Image (cartoon, rainbow, N blue to C red; front, side, top):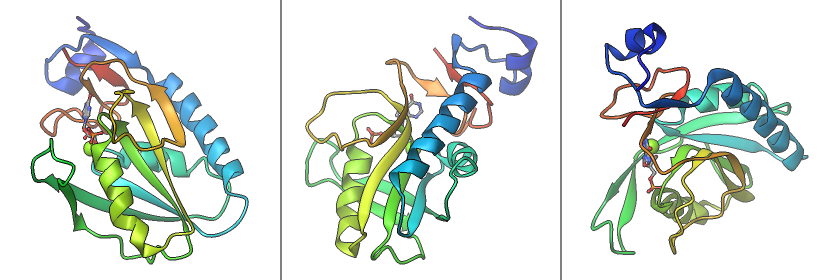
Length: 184
Ligand code: IMP
Ligand code: MG
């Protein structure tokens, strides 16, 4: 268990098991992802769509490393229905106000676990006729499920642990940690 004053001040006394990705490691990887994204979209309108709330810190760092014109919007999704049924769906609590038609859409997520959320979102947004649609996730747990969507840009492979920080929460706490930690 990690009980440094830096950690304990921020968590209110809750130790974390370990810091999995520190600030410098994250910053370097985000910079490289930004360069990849810049190169991948030589032309056309690019709309960066962040999934709230988890992606808010990652997205704000990422967009500042992208060296081309972009637009930014967010969406808030809620899953409902039996999670085990493929008929389960995702509902938008906040729908992007920007038109998607004819634009490259880059969906930005904090972490992909089963991939269900993203898979359903792609299905939902597809009929709006974007020019292309791709996923950028900071973390990928690499669970092999049938519904796994294609992940075009991935920051890090994540260990099979419960991670918090840099946008990721546990019961809405710890999103503000500047590093990514294993809580257990
Ligand atoms: P999926 O639909 O199974 O891919 O679930 C992805 C969502 O689960 C993410 O947007 C997160 O909100 C949440 N999630 C999955 N793993 C973790 C974790 O380790 N820490 C925090 N949230 C997680
Ligand atoms: Mg999330």
